[in-house]
Image 1 (cartoon, rainbow, N blue to C red):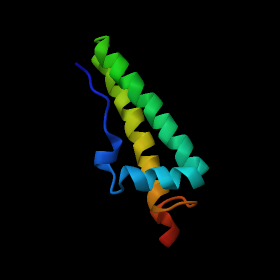
Image 2 (spheres, rainbow, N blue to C red):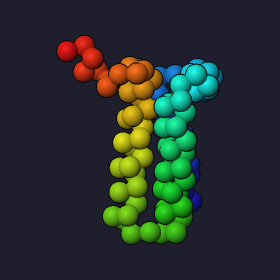
Image 3 (tube, helix red, strand yellow):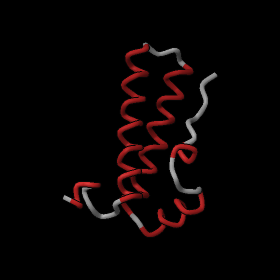
Length: 85
């Protein structure tokens, strides 16, 4: 049975910290909403026994959104670690 992915286990921040940052960061809020949406698509595709390629693409999309979330948490308002160069 497919299970929703727990994003908070992967991040270095607690649920409370992210909830607090989400209230003041519109981009982070948007990315977290997008992540939830894509994660739901993954769960739905897995439950429907979708083709492996389709599930793989959705998981890759979810990972890209997660990477954007991490970037926004670590380097808010920048283009990521490149700000140091």
